[in-house]
Image (cartoon, rainbow, N blue to C red):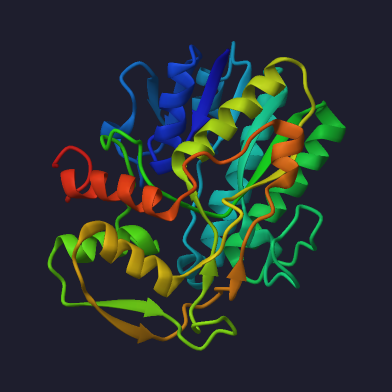
Length: 328
């Protein structure tokens, strides 16, 4: 298949692009490089520097495509709370122009990177896909808004779409040559690994008064390699004429922030003092996935689901590339 991957120079996009190429697909990456890394794009892919809202760029890359994998967008909860207008622009308004261009070019299949944040504060865990969608932060609201736009595009233009609601993504390509490199970094595992790699004396955990066993947030961590594999499977399902759907992508297990920090210390063999800081705005207490629907309907189950494996792969990347791409 000929695939357009938006955001393919980012963390998830670069890993997914490599997996698609390894499976024999032809990939074009569309990325503004505002937060992505040119060095992260596999040399077998064509890289076009551009924005998903730029009609000229879309008209250049969409002809001949069989499907779009839409992974571009802004992802930080705290930043979204501070800049909601910007998040709605990047995550909704610009991608709507992409949907219009897809319709004009006859591209009728899309895999979308959504989020577990659409569920907000779930009434119970694990969270299934039929749980109420009541996002509590701007980031989750933008993702849900685009999911609803996909429903309308399906009715109006026959678009078949897969919406993957990610839980916390972590880890790196198992070989250690491709991984997470955000600036600034806000995700727990890479923050902790950067702290121990730099010899930092203390590490701040956001919030210690949540209604959880140890007072810190509980999250479901999915390995980025497993996430990418699900995207490939969904893409091939659409390519074979299959229907789209909504699927959670998660490990099915919950780990508290303190558990994750301690696992990072064990895997690296380095200790750091823990400081409990204030809550981060917009963070729910518990998010753990039910991935039963993905197993039953897509045939996907996580394989690299042990937290120590996830942290170990991430540590292999971070220890070899302490300053990110091109400088490790």
